[in-house]
Length: 181
Image (cartoon, rainbow, N blue to C red; front, side, top):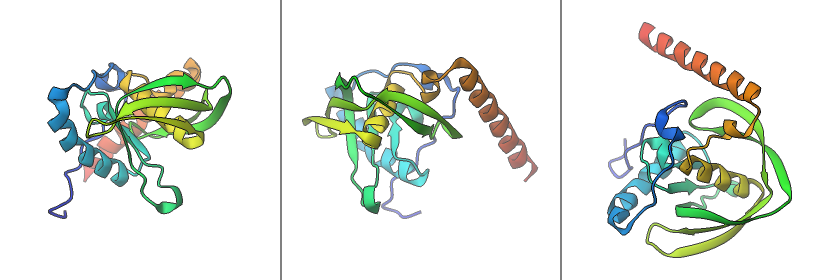
């Protein structure tokens, strides 16, 4: 590994209990730890590969998420510290979602089409953005993680149970395959 590259973090897989717990707000006392965490979160997200990652997914119960849609293959990283949705459109949009904590599992999720999100960056500066399309869905998905909510919590119990059983079976199979090597 490149000596300058940040160490990758381990992504928790559902149904890990940390993924179902509400993360605590970042305080000024957390500033140094958060600044050290963010590059590792981005490196882990890009390696996975994914377009969003919340701190609880890497076993850190703080309200921090990173997002990068990589539109046109160009990095456009966004750091969300203590994000909150301050407005949501009445119009809804449905799109297929997946999650690094539920590898290989996907489902259609309906969410507000547009949201206004207020947050701080890693230096503490306050920002507000209006997001729509994929960015809106991604930010809402990551904020859900900070609240202990997974994308499967937005679908029917039947579909959720099917996905969770399939995920458990695939994880078991991977462990068995790894044990044979």
